[in-house]
Image (cartoon, rainbow, N blue to C red; front, side):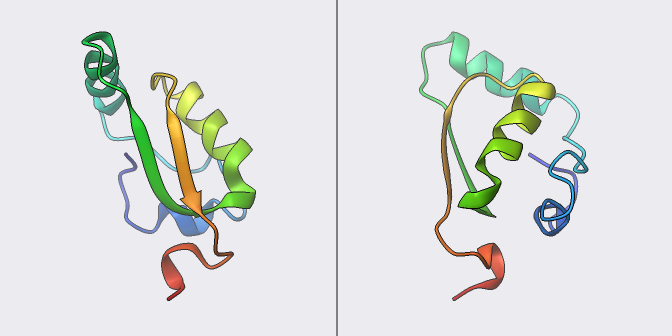
Length: 78
């Protein structure tokens, strides 16, 4: 949902720093309005859950289920 692949890395310092793709929130809202269950999977570490949820809400994404990485290393882990 972010414009750069490595935006997750910057989330360690500022969860709000990533930019959302234009119309990404509208697309996901359209799926939610059709009754689809929206699930976001991310390599961000679980300790970033609150910041991640806040980022999605601030960018207009629908309420959803979130699955974050149990590893502190996220996408860099094994």
